Image (cartoon, rainbow, N blue to C red; front, side):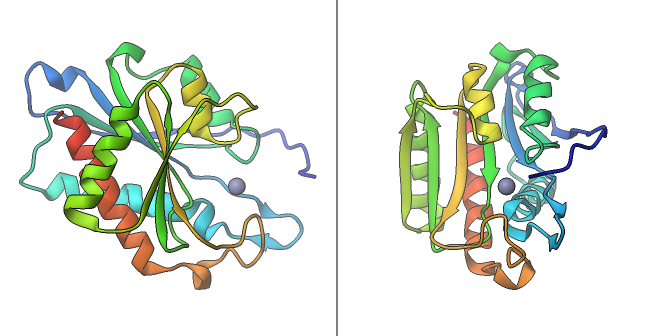
Length: 214
Ligand SMILES: [Zn+2]
């Protein structure tokens, strides 16, 4: 049971403007929650949940900023706070969006991409094209086992991605699958598998480019 703390969270944004004069007004959002559990009462670092995703997102931001590839649509990088506290950052975003909802072509939400052997995508059932483009990215450049799963989110949201889907965004949760400690002191940097973290980061990079250029 988490203690109830009176605190203020912060969502943090970065943006790379699209190269197309018209399509730059449409957006691909990459999101990852930046918080974890902290001392409860042991330190739970959250290396996989969800520092791995923050690292992948920052890696893609740096790579895209330096790349000769200039995607047509703009790409927003969004660190959301308060996931563990009850999805507060993503819920706040859906009530206070940065850009018009109908200009968002995709939200790629990252969850725990630092442990495992396979990649997984849960996509909103109305947007199978997102999963197809993530498969294309994997087939062309990453070559990992990839499971895609259509989701309807009939139960209560348990990820920021579900919050975005319930709010009507074309969203896909990206995971690494197969192992790891969940909400446990052993979710620390020693448990991270650099190989799958790199694969997930490359997969995110190409998936974001394919969607931004579709
Ligand atoms: Zn968690």
